[in-house]
Length: 316
Image (cartoon, rainbow, N blue to C red; front, side, top):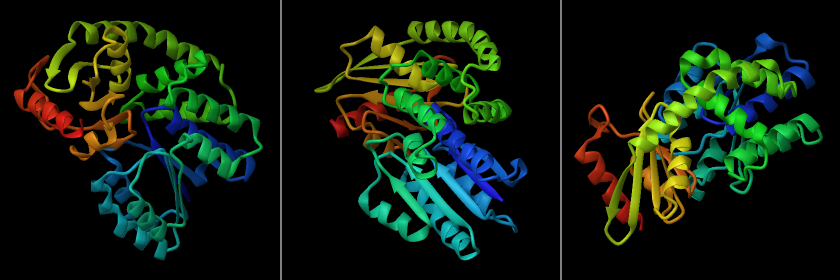
């Protein structure tokens, strides 16, 4: 059995998985029941890996895509080592910033580890598995457009919105459908149109909610930090806030569906910021968790505010 585990939050993660599915099922002749697809984020990656590798029958291959590294992930290293001994080939394709020493340690533990920050994960996966395939190339192009925010393709933005709409384990079946359609190059399938129709009203309502609840904090010697929340992805919230408050120095968006937090800034290293909370990501955008965000509905705790300010000053 082959297992693919990818980042559930964005098109780069699901696009990577679509290329993997296209390679194994459509090109290598692997049957559908021989490959299983899982989704994870930074908060449950360790649990997902343990669940996959701690069973009596482990997969012949485990392919991880678009998941970076934070210090808590060291917990899976013994599981990697044991799984490789038992015959599981583990591959990890990523583009998040990772310390050189950690890269070398991961390489020593698994079959393949490729990390290229200049590419998105889908581009790395495409180059490894399906370099000459035009559909894989298009998936990777769309993934790069959303992950690096070049905003060239409305279709890519729509697909990202659909993925955000289907976050959470309760929507895994829809994520499987997204991966399947992308893997076939069926980018304009009516199913996507139906999804867009369902999510447009939701996006408008939650986007307005995030603007109405935005709070500006003045951080000494740094500038303005804008924080808000809604039942949409934190990354989308930060983009909405940046458009509304272009002179602010940092933006934090909280997804109220699961309390995932995204920070975006061009003025601090967001990855280093997130690592203080056992999170991770990119220099300009990263994700993390905090145990006590809200005192009451729509009222931030003082501890959250103070910790965020203190950490911003530490990175400034």
